[in-house]
Image (cartoon, rainbow, N blue to C red; front, side, top):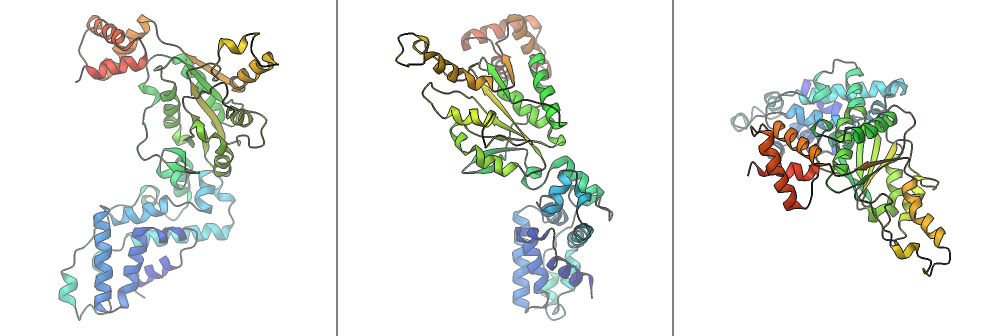
Length: 411
């Protein structure tokens, strides 16, 4: 049996990585191999469709990468166990099947176009047509498959560092339409990009590292003035600790009733998650905050062990209060109980970190640091004068205002 036919049979018998055969490129490639005994028109049609597909996908010069990438981002019993660092606990027969599947995928990835064409049953009959067909280039394999040497350790280490399935392919996620959806173009800000607020970030970093190391940690509320970097800090935390198995899923406040569904989706996954609720606030009559209270503490659908809730708000107590709520003239019979109910939500965050607007000195320091990173050659005095004018036009100082000012200098 020649190499091409043997590879076709190996692909047909994939087991652990079976689902990759539903992916577009592997499926079309397998169809091409299966057409090697068909009539000339059927074979040429399969070849034309396959080459058209890989050309559209931009992988006609790197077929090996496209095929192995499909396996790399597959979610199965092995990739989930490897992402959790437990792949050696799998039964020997499963590990043997994984190794065989990896070898089959690599064999397919390294099949040259010339080798496939020469294996066509009626090559001698239509050799002139076959010889004129375009050829693909194999190129290099994806990530860990490039280093695969028969041992699963290298492959498993990649999943341990990057996660499995869509959680390996993408970095950030959002809860939409009752499911976790990847964010294709997420904010790639990192902790090194910040200037100022070291004390606040230090608390959040310490809490996150405790979470990742299986130590005692808390849900976190980042509250304070707008434009001070609360949301950016959470996103930067997720970016910096991705290699440690951390992922972020943002859920809108209006979808908090679906929190149990989100919990069910992530509870059995090997990665750890920040469930991010941005710009959290409730009106005094908004009863949906009771859902979040139950999630934070005491509810049947409480967060799983592999998740923390990080929320941002411009309000310390999250729920909007009015003076009439504290008035003895209020028509609420139990005014004090009503106040306690209103304030109890924020108390359920074990860690609350306050972000306030910087004073003038801190503001100018942030501006100068940002300008230096961007390579601006203006003096501190010039930057300070311009930054102050800019802040006055924007209604106040903030890190966001500082960033906008520096960006304006490039306009």
